[in-house]
Image 1 (spheres, rainbow, N blue to C red):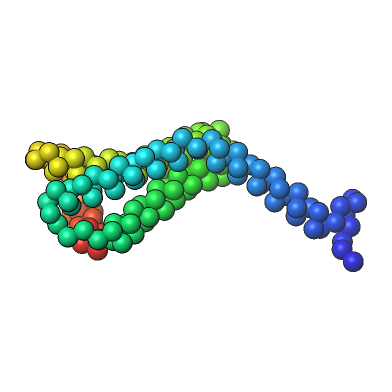
Image 2 (image 1 turned 90 degrees about the horizontal axis):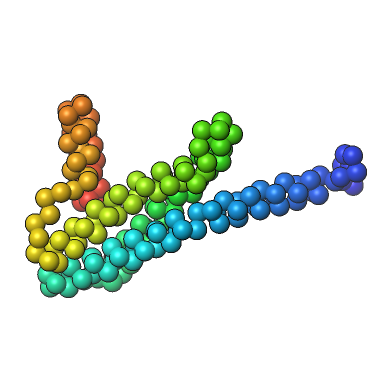
Length: 165
């Protein structure tokens, strides 16, 4: 027999908690709907221009590799979005500092910066423009200006990440 507390069974209590949290999670996801659309648009644009660049250069193109990298990016950016939102719901909203949509936008902003950098690189390459500006290089330069050793470490980590892809 189930434990009865104030006329409510333990399983009913769990159902109420899960139902309430589920409804709140759906509301939070609804608030982030346009950020999800932005993720899709950026990833499709990067995929399109990346494939176009490969075909333009007459490089060997493997759809499976491009598809795998695109799926990995989608998972990464959705993770940034959800992590930012959960941190906002768990910490920043209770303290009254920021809303979950603001913290989700900050989390997604990091992913967008890298994706836009990638898209600009593909478009410049397609049109024969030498792209000298990179957000990644700018960040490394700013870090190196503040702390040379830290800048070298970040640059090395990013170059190792690029080699793995």
